[in-house]
Amino acid sequence: MEIIRIPRIVQDTCKKYRMKGRSVGFVPTMGALHEGHLSLIRRSRMENDITVVSIFVNPLQFGPSEDLARYPRDVESDSNKISALETDILFLPDDALMYSPAFSTSVEVAGVSEKLCGRFRPGHFRGVATVVAKLFNIVSPTRAYFGQKDYQQTVVIRRMVKDLNFDLEVVICPTIREHDGLAISSRNTYLGPEERIAAAAIHRSLSRGAGAVLQGERSAGRIREMVEEGLAAEKLINRIDYVAAVDLATLDDVEEIGREIVLAAAVRIGKTRLIDNLLVNV
Ligand code: PAF
Image (cartoon, rainbow, N blue to C red; front, side, top):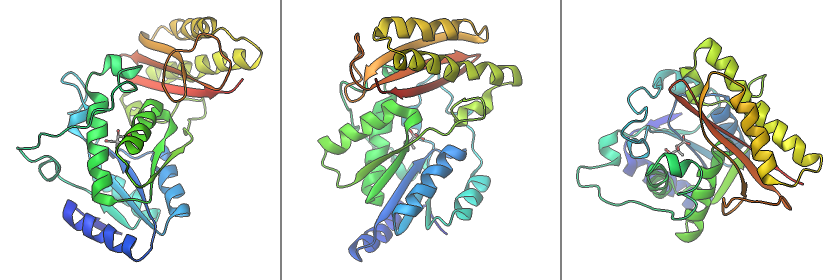
């Protein structure tokens, strides 16, 4: 595996591969790699000639009161995991090479960025869209891989790819879960033992809502209430940011469930904000 820190070198290397007709799969990450990331890398390896993984903790997507400083970082362990999967290139840029002092461009995907998490994390999806656009321009991938756990992020990126004519395919891979259903996330490492047990209530409550839809309940309001009740019953969940039943593409609230929807929730356990979602087909 080649470890490259300089964007220009990654750009030239990937262009050469593409010019030789080889497909490039790209897995952008912020490190602290877990099974979710590894599943994206494996999928990219299966579907492409070359796989590039980036690790960059993107300051633009963290709000002033968010966890940028305490975001877990362990480049050595990450790089061993990536190399064990026979990744071709690990792109490890420094902040200064990604954002020069004069950096002044941002990519704003209006509409879908403002809903769900966008209401609680102003500027977050602008930061994500901006760095992903930069990374796409550096790597010029044939396919880019994202996890369904960050469902809104996948919608924002797909919209950006269409709107800005990026010539690549966005591949969304299933959420990887712990034995009790908790969606695997780098932020799970912040949870104490009791909080960790409490966190299983998120998937349990969403599954209860999804189960009710499958059994014929069509009122999104009733489904949201059921999920909220499940979350509220868990004492260590100290805040429910939202429970939403939304359209797959627009993320607009659905009232009567007549087609596939996303049932999504964001909660806080202590200081840790966790999100999860399920796609529910009637
Ligand atoms: O999902 C993530 O880890 C990040 O939002 C991403 C896509 C790597 C951009 O920084």
